[in-house]
Amino acid sequence: MPKDADLPPVIVAAHVSKTYGDRRALDDVSFEVHAGEIFGVLGRNGAGKSTLLESIVGLRRLTSGEVRVFGVDPARDRRAVTSRVSVQPQAAALPERLTVLEILRLFASLHRRPRRIFDVIDLIGLAEQDAVAVRDLSGGQLRRLLLGVALIGNPELVVLDEPSAGLDPAARRGLQDIVRSLAAHGVTVLYSTHDLTEATDLCDRVAILHDGALAAVDRPDELVRQSSTVSSIAFTAPAGSGFGWLRLRASVTSLTVEAVDGGERVLVTTDDPDAVLRAVIERPGLRTWAYDVRRGSLEDVFLAVIGDGMSEGQAS
Image 1 (cartoon, one colour):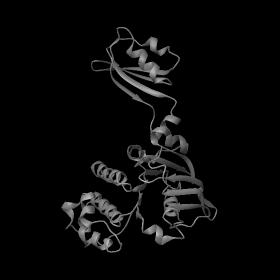
Image 2 (image 1 turned 180 degrees about the vertical axis):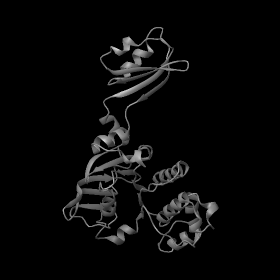
Image 3 (image 1 turned 120 degrees about the vertical axis):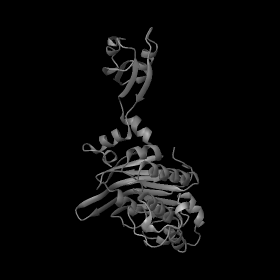
């Protein structure tokens, strides 16, 4: 169940469609996002992600359907929405000669009740760079500063459009920690990403867009469970253990054995991993170790949804 599902949803998208001439960017998209939820938006380039995010923050008027953010139409009631919502776009220009502290002071002055500047600096991990000019920040530090700009107004909903693009693993992990901290304090996060591993680790639920339509929406683990009918089991055993008996089981799709240091590595694909595991563990006289059980991934779900081509999480 989504976080705070008993409260009114923060975002309601109902039968949202958007066309540009003959091209349909969004096609009858419906979902809800709840308070304190990290909600991921996934899809290939051109799938409709940016149009959807822009519609949610009121920058695009819909062809049909409706969006409600905190109960109001974001395109018609801009003032009510902008006081509670903040956006970090994929790219933004900041005055290069201003320091981190000066940038945050500038943007804090635009809000009625901004967060404490040094609290934001601590949150985004730039305490040691507060006197550094924008032009001298690394790519990861600049991304953190852009996030700080998005947070300085103390928003209740934060929309992040591919915030981790181009970040190294350490910077990406730091960004994810900030997002989790926001959600833990009740802030709702709408998070667009091409990184499917990141979406799996970070998001409470994800929506997958394909050709403008909502192809799937649920928790990452639930999407994997629903779509994955075959699991893989790997384990190590002493050389010459013999697994012809296991290959004959009806639930075993395939079985391969590869020689490794200290024995042999066995890889089994099966539609009943629990039964196979019990059979191996309970086999008299058989010693096994180093188990690894996998039941697909969000990337598998994504590839199944889009039908063909490489997932963007793999490509980025």
